[in-house]
Length: 163
Image 1 (cartoon, helix red, strand yellow):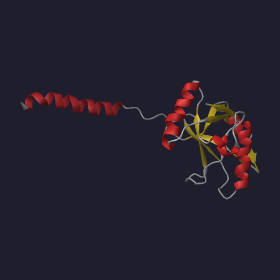
Image 2 (tube, rainbow, N blue to C red):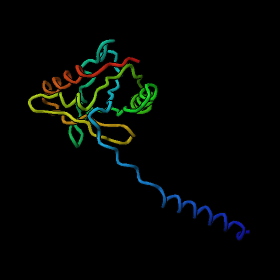
Image 3 (spheres, rainbow, N blue to C red):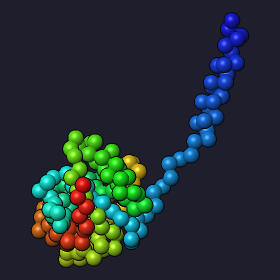
Image 4 (cartoon, rainbow, N blue to C red):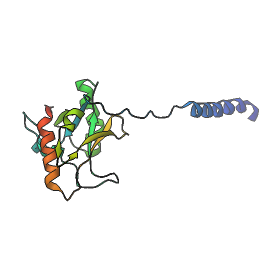
């Protein structure tokens, strides 16, 4: 009876080995382009009105990462409107247990126009999850005025999309 199971066992081992050896590595995310749509999801009703996103939606958290201060955003270029909201629901709302109420859309070109005393911001891919990125280049936490100024300028450039 052990002889009858040997081919099945061999086949299982072969598939496991073969599948593992042909797996492609995860592709490196492409750099963010100047005209690519970037979305900051808004979970707080005090962070937007029907006409604009308020600057508080663009303030990065007060915790420093090993790479400095970062603001989490989604790379939503080439997604349908429904898919943009689905991405936010799956990758932002699900982890916070909250509901996305709106979003602020901007481009890297918009972000490059934002500066404060020589401080400029940029967007870098930060996967996983796919399409996640960070706005980096923020002043340290103790420079609240500079961070607020950058957030205000970015909010002025962003287009609000209310759900």
